[in-house]
Length: 422
Image (cartoon, rainbow, N blue to C red):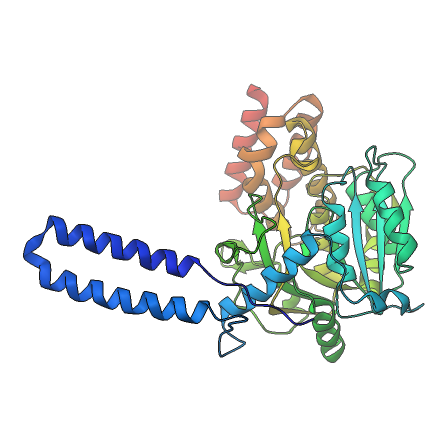
């Protein structure tokens, strides 16, 4: 696809704004008149130069590595997918029984966003892919939309849940049915934003024999992307990361949680999105968890336990500075509209599961870190009777451990006191 570069009008607006400020400055403070006139003339020259350059059709920066150039390409691809346009129709006919990558999407009442999410996979430059969509018992028109798309693209496979079973179950079932060598997951209101991200990830993973490959993206908290040709302010949401090293065990696990003396700092997001994961590793992780866990009903923070196992059993990991995905934080989505008691329940059960894989090890510090990180925000507000019992159980398990420092145990005891007062 040839990208038609969008005209960036924001720079011109900024220069106009600066000119107005200078005029005001000149009017109010006449003693600096000569200085203001010089600045004004310089701004006018810059303004007309910018206007001349941006009036050219298909204007691009000289270097393709320029950040603004990359964002323009991303923006054009986003607009294409958001409008539901399909690129490279011929690729849908080149279906392979042994796809290179499986795109995995869970849907639940996603009729307003699912088309753009699917298009962001269909529009990839890689044709040897499959798209597995797990419908978690939608009650709107989501299933009808997917079924229509499936008729024209044999790469799309639909798995229907006979009742609402939650994200953990749905994504796990999708992964177990994946035939691709690697899995790249996507939420139904998100989309891949780089037309070549599947190719980039596959080549990088193959060359370096990687189990986990992470790439960068944008995380949006507001629906700022509009269906027009204006340059959106998505640059503000860039997730900048420095690590670009291929890691091997035993240092691998520290890429998820960096232990620096008495402090623990999370380096890698504990999400499924933004990663290319070897399918065999995914299957091994699910077997490690056990069917009784991955078939549990979970919707909130369900990928934390899976990611924890990924990084415990993987042999290699790499982060690449490629922008590949938009993760849209929707405060009105199903996960974020749960009652506080449900959120607290899922958080605590998640941490209890992680405890079972870390007991009698120094990794228990991670659970204390996560508990502290989530206590005031999501756990304490939702402490009903069941959640109180789970919280007490988890804290008591941590208190008897020799791997938890005294300072941390004091904090845990305060949580116990808080629970008893409620």
